Image (cartoon, rainbow, N blue to C red; front, side, top):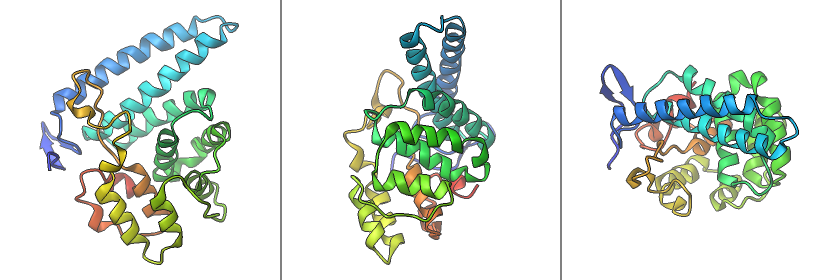
Length: 237
């Protein structure tokens, strides 16, 4: 594998070493500088300029989520990752639409499940987001219902493995199989092979949804710990 995990660089345990620590630091610095500019512009935007406000919030939600993923990849404390995540969903709840990426919404909800102990701080924002996304997809429903402490209704999903998971008595086997093929299954995703891009779009490859489902279904995930895409420490927060 190109990826080694838990590589210590400068005293920090890198969770992802496709790129060196300097790369991730530079991305955080660039993204936070852009965040500052966008937030300043947003603050000075006339309330009547709804399109401008929407575009600004959309950019900020993406930048903050990028920072959450980048900081996680480079080994930051989970509190720092969480602070970026919170900022991201507070903007994204205002701009989410049914036309958005299913995978993007799944990421937001999955990370929420992994930070579920703090859910009183963000559940209402995720509920607004899920309502605006307006999807009855089984995986979306499972994630939000878990966060709401509601009984899980195992509906059909566009993601075939989730349908298998719902019907299987060996849920660990289903998740293990999906995790082993997860990266290849996302060839159509905008981030696929982004570590090869000259545009510095790479922020790390993390399968938050499998970690979230492992938590929801009480699966012993110790065998997933060495998978380079599995956010093991976040799954055990």
